[in-house]
Length: 97
Image (cartoon, rainbow, N blue to C red; front, side, top):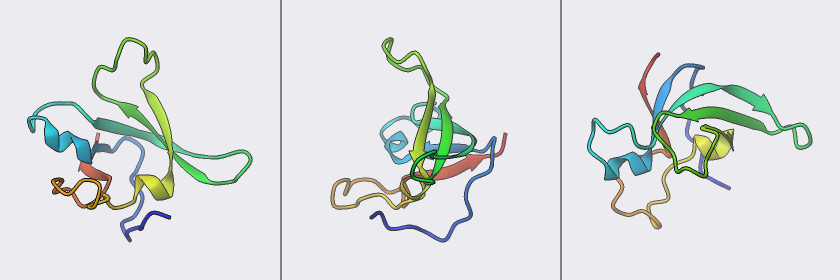
């Protein structure tokens, strides 16, 4: 189970960056997302974060909207797997829309 932090969940409209954004120039939109809202998984009752990519995806990706379990979305970066990453959390706040 991922290690959770004590930050409040992001709000709809918040712009966040995934830790892989560090591999691109600071002004690049790569791995930046807008929080659209939250949903409940119909079978497991798990809370999901619904978010939209703010960068162009590959041609085979027709949708830019994704869902991820809240606990995973708010988890810390696995420093064993990604020792070169400075960002502490998988997703971090950038700005309010």
